[in-house]
Length: 428
Image 1 (cartoon, rainbow, N blue to C red):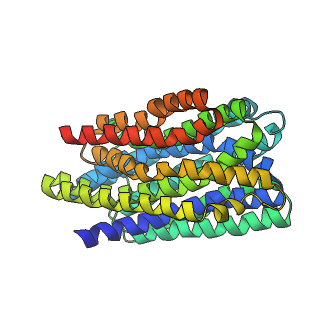
Image 2: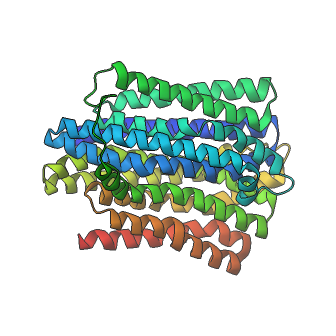
Image 3: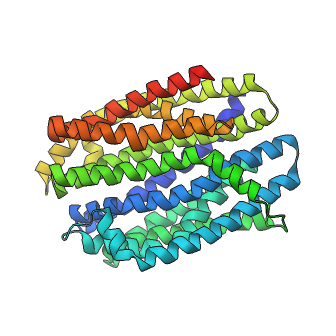
């Protein structure tokens, strides 16, 4: 079981890291080619990216659980019908999102926090991302389905392809052509399109139990999948929501330079969260499969293994970031040009990084609750972590302690949510 778990978890974590790297690539190239304020503009745009990614997760995560259960029972026809039904619905959703976003581009840019100094860059970045919304939504769905189909390494290759393409195109568009934040957006969108093409080829011509086939559309596949995926959707949505709330609070308390500092911390947090999400996604197909076989003992053993792994990774990330804080920050903020900003970011980062220890517990348990068809508990945990406890903690801490309170608030909120998660698990 341990070997099987890591055969799923390791490729999943690598995929998530690669996703993080090509997300960070935009910030790296933009900060060096344009400047810190352009980096802040990219960060202000991120809640929208998290939102469309979350829409994909809403169908993808739950559908993966449903399809894994069907495959565990040997019901191949039902698995194929669920796969195609969710794919068609996501294509329709992506069309609507693209249309609405293009019509409301300026309003969305202003809502996210595009100040007069940052509005042009925020609007320019988002305007390109909107065009590629369909690929953002569909690529993740196909990647998750590839894992459920029994090909975790293939899914990792698709993300590696996107990461390599994004970094190469970032260098070309941003550094060489001088397209600024728009070049970074083009690079990201094209990378998503290439990854989607790779996965489409697998389901069209590869060895798959699913594939693009004639199917029976059923609302029950959507309702069941969405119900199970809400917890993971809230987890992803909470990332965007907290970036949005943090940006607004930082602009009020510190100013635009604070957003630059937070952007660097957010990139590190993305690496940590993606590590934990990768571990959880490696666990979910196996837990769902054995849940379908009604083998609760194996499900619990897989959960313990995932929790131990995520806790060890959380401590590892905390220690690593404490030791190499300056190195990580200098990748985005040049200390020779902006030493005061660099020094402040390093100092606050060492406070903020304590929260990394607790993230794995919350992410893993939220995914586990959905995998065993207890999505309400995942929703409670995810909403507490991102939409209630975290927001309340940020408001209280920033009001009481100013800038220091902002960076300390994730430590408090993540630890409180870990206690809530443990209490919920004890009731099952």
